[in-house]
Image 1: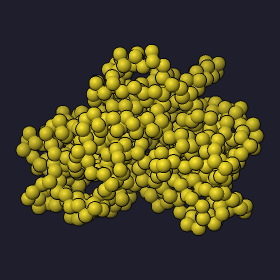
Image 2: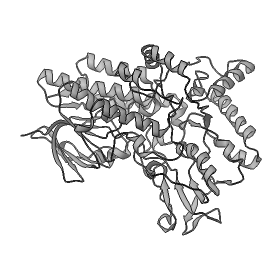
Image 3: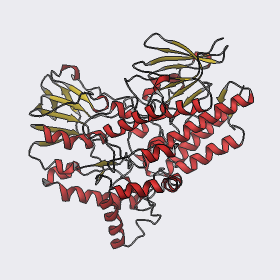
Image 4: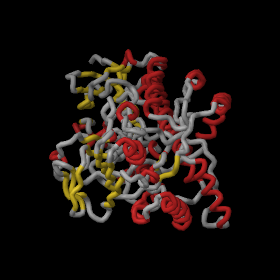
Length: 529
């Protein structure tokens, strides 16, 4: 039975690019199938105004190549989407990756052929490819969620989704614009859209916590220091739960004297970024400590937003850090503009979209353009759009009917030779994605090499190992406050989606240790054939 490739890789983002590079290094043949016209994944599709990474650029970067680290120059503390996309293209060119990539093609189905022990992959271009392994690199936030609001198709103006923005850009100058959603993409894009639009109306269901980015051009001296000490910074980052090198204060917020506590919060606030949640070690473990951090941020909202009613609507009511913390540039200040209106729909959903706008709380709102900043079907959305069928023709959709179950976030019982880069059950979205991606890719590449050395061509997770891992992921999530609220981490933004805390919250170091133990014990929990 002929095999076209050792591996088919789905997706040409940072996961797919590095996977291709590693497999080539080990002498495997691979083909990357990518729906877009180019590389970049998340950063190819997400081109909404203000799109920017919330991890500092010097850390949100590959570390597998010291030469790449030295030659690439980041220009800003938090890189913009265009700069990250340039970086992705630079990597693709530098390592000559495109010759093994097929663009503008979607994988529609993949079926495991049990007689031949290989995958039969189909695409929307009628390709039929036989591959020993299939590796998904589709990203955790790559399946845009379009809400089911009555009348959405009736709106006569243009409708845009932040997760699928027109590549030529959109100019809202002189236009009235309605925005639905106040998550990360909205918090980044609203300040810029407000500068352009004649009037911007923001419809908010849930007020979100956000911390200032304090973004700035990178000082050349700082860049030289980073480049001189990259290995040390990367080593430190691997010891931190989020895989990001920032200082974690292990003290308890509630046990710290008030003046010292206020000073620590303010210091983190003044520095900016996600490190705010590392102000104290128990912000996600202790309700009282969490409330102190939340109250600090709530006070900031009231200080910035001039209209008291608007300020109170923007004050988040839930636990800080329970939903993904956002990083912004001038978000709350935007609501002081005369051309911006906030409509709080937390107590009553939008009634319907109309031809000229929408109706909410008994009032009609008119606008020329509609922006859906409504996020993604996270972690599983992209995977379940492909008709994966494993042993006995069972689909992945059936297998995950009650929520995703994986072994290490990498593999699924009944689906031999199928690997997922940063799948549900791995640290993924709770970490700096780049080191998490590299760790997964290295694990998969080494695994394929080990199979070849043993003369084996099939690897599959064992049921007991998968159940144990799923139990561990659940147990660890219950320790923290993060699992207590309705967020996309548990699929709460998608009607009918099973409520399961999907990422592994135990931290990158603990996860790496678990994977290393599996390998050290000769791929414990896997059946090789």
